[in-house]
Image (tube, rainbow, N blue to C red):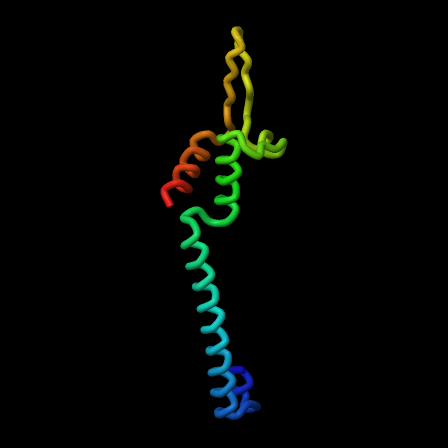
Length: 106
């Protein structure tokens, strides 16, 4: 629009009116984005896919809703020792524990 105005093909009043409309639309979109971000952060300090992964990790750690995908995503190795003792090594054990703690502090 500015180029049209500068070239003299768009009158000043029309340019101002169109610019105000564009600025209004930009402001509306920015407000919607900020509102959406505020709602998301109100739900959790852990955003989007990280939160979903943390919830899956929590379910895994509590032994509920265990799926093959969760097993392959979180378990690095399983060791069976003499006497029947089983040790499970998790891929992201420290991260999972920290994220689960963050979920419970809300």
